Amino acid sequence: ICDPLRYAQRVTRRTLTFMLLFCWIVSAIISTPILLSMSPTLAKGRIEMVGCPNDCRFLISVGILFTIGMVPYFTSVLLIMLMYGRIYQVARSQARKIGTQSHGLPGVASETTSRWTNMKREHSATKTLGSIIAAFIISWLPFYILAIVFTMYQDIFLPYKISFWIGYMNSTI
Image (cartoon, rainbow, N blue to C red; front, side):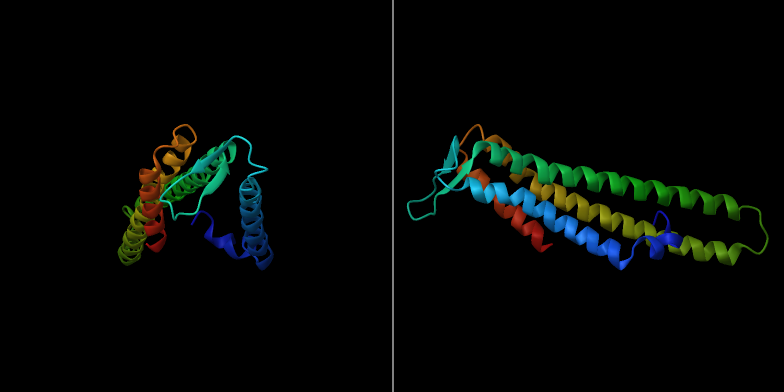
């Protein structure tokens, strides 16, 4: 959207491979300390989530739980909002350029109509993307807020579990 003429030059197989590897490596960096902290001998200052008697006990370090609540979600939301803002800014700029180029020029009516149709389609796509982003933020926000609050108050197991399922439902959207 920002630079469509150079897209093929910028987004090569090598670039895509690097981006995928980067995502997997960051995920491993985030999850490895979590997995290591689940050992009762390694988890000093741990939180013990106790549910029903038949539930599995989940031990996790307070610091790790706080990190889970802050780093992945809020970093993702910040990046998504910055990218969406940039896309919106470029789309508005392009719409203004189309509007100023078509005023008062003879024989540009059919081209303007075509561009107007494309602009409507892009506007609809922008709204759809905005709705998807809003669904992501709204669905996962309760879980991550409770993950942070849970580091201080461990007696909120039911709301934590509910927010977890809201987040899972978001993944099905």
